[in-house]
Figure (cartoon, rainbow, N blue to C red):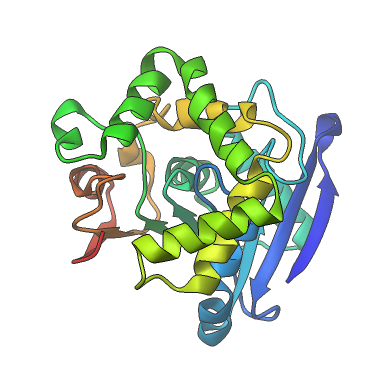
Length: 263
């Protein structure tokens, strides 16, 4: 893994991590909420085998970069454009997972001329009432707070930050999660936990902001996202309902939905 930092206009910094094949086809991966760019490590071996250069940036306020008070969904495309220019990349793919999905679609809309294809993995977003049937209670509550009183999500995220504050605490969380889902890969689970801890080490406000941003309506018609989009989703997902992914697939002009039997 390589980690780097880029100075952006206005004094902000953008840090990113690289996995996979350094000479491979470039993919900008946007991790979920709240996960820093370290989360891209879950795909390191897969990307290497597929010949992909897996570029995983830290979103504002996660990992290295500072908090961006005026952050918007579409501003992520500007950050990726600056990073692509710095790396000398004229053409690339985009991938986004969970809460990173809406940011990825916004970047695809903004950077359409440079994007070859988009992959959305268990994407989250602003669901409609009928799509929330079967969602976990905590996901419904978090979404309601995000839409109506975003600051209330601070409590849950602050508790999460405290639970992951030390290596010993993270190890206990890992053991507990592996006991609950023994079929999960321990290495990937560890990377995910470290990515969450890294995202929250500066505090909780960036995660609270991000949850609220992902529950807002898209600031553009989905019909304007002209690049091919592949959505990979679990049919039993209770955090990001499959009904939401089906609606995206209907509304995007060039979308293919791949549904697995897992959650």
